[in-house]
Length: 437
Image (cartoon, rainbow, N blue to C red; front, side):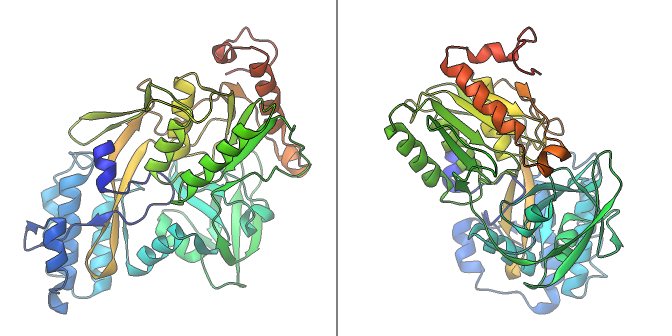
């Protein structure tokens, strides 16, 4: 895994970005060094659709995690649309039709506009309302609202199902098309029909704005007072390349504080991001043992181990909810399986797949699922999620009254840990002090 990470950026979250470039021309897969030359030789425009389509077909054939390609003969797609693709739009439709046959919402084509938008995202700026979306149980679902954005301020929550966008049904919609409809010029509005569990559908009209993506902060939720002897760190995503450094700085500052008991790491509604960030931040707390294992299309399992030496040995409580996905689940799983932290909150999202983004010709891109990952104990959490050690649900009434019962419980648990309660005891159903899984 470490060798792979030196060569590439791999993402395990709602955001997936530029990985690298491998172009397929005339049936020949080019190496990165060959690419530097060949990208200056552009095929005639009339061949663009078939070149692009074949490039996507070849990458899936070579890299997709499921060698059966969803139990189908992948070769049937290679020349299926050769005689009907004339324009760029023809190629996009053909590619999306081909990819839909994989039944994998995370393997998706990005046209030049979408690809540029994802590159903007990793630089820390977006235009929209501030939500991460995905397909769950065949429904367009809010994975997480971004902190301090119009979506969060309007009251959208992780797990909300989006039934309509500006009056148009989202049935069978792709994530990309939904994102296009939700995005828009700053100052304009979008109306979402939201279905929340056990509630009637409700309309939310939200004004779009420029979204600044913040990864790490110590802002405590409203109406909450954090004890002086506890360091609270809110990690809202693993996307930014600066996340590791910012997180490390806060831990180092915490270690300088006299009388510090421990840390509460808040990963609620964190949709994921860079795999490298999840591994390096986990490594700050673990002195040995596995952090994560990945399994590729050939069934080869590669484990990433913690390096010797930690930034802190103080007790840790990790907060998760159903919006905690991918990289958040890698970190949470590593901390839980290694007995390094107590997890408090609700079942996580359940995205146990790793994507790689390949740049295509003419500034398009494709996001390909190349691996699945397992927690240190070998657990496949895809479509299942991670169960917290201490189950605490945040109700609509709690949100309305700004009563963060999950954070309150995290403080209580950390105090128990510092008084000598071992981490393992929080998994026992005989514990009558706290709610257990």
